[in-house]
Length: 116
Length: 115
Image (cartoon, rainbow over all chains, first blue to last red; front, side, top):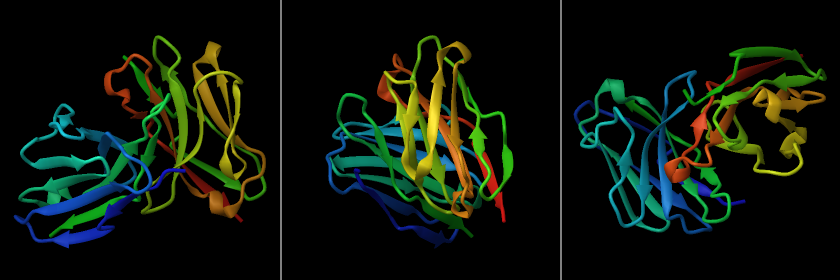
């Protein structure tokens, strides 16, 4: 099956700094990638849909200026958490949609962000 | 409102026993249906999916799921659980008429396996 990677797998940063998370589709081209956030013992919440070459579409309640998404190529999307604060600490998961009849999504392994 | 419901937050099962995880959805038309598994600190792995056709779907790791239109359900089953099946399981749907083919997840069911 299709493989999606994320980097880094975990990151610890100081409050006020910015953190960039990369999501790559390794063996297919993904015109659409998705970013999810998962709090401990909770389900995944969609944050935004990232489309190659265009602006991301954010879900209601997600701050666009806080979570910057760039999808500059068909295999890479980045999520930048700007001016991170402890409440931004979470598990961030990306997925990439493989073009096809059913547009199946493949998930990355996730990035654990801890803001001190 | 459109939703995906996993009624059981936790399930504890003995190793070797059978397992069934429930999933119900409320959408006007039958959506695409998925089951994912997540081990602690890991991403999601697709167990199986249903788009159309045979309502009994076979997946990886010995899992299967049955789509029942009349009950709006897509329950996941495994005849004999192994200790390695301890994980969080998520049911997810893609509504056919939703823009962007976004996945909507259920709340998840945590499975604990007793020796």
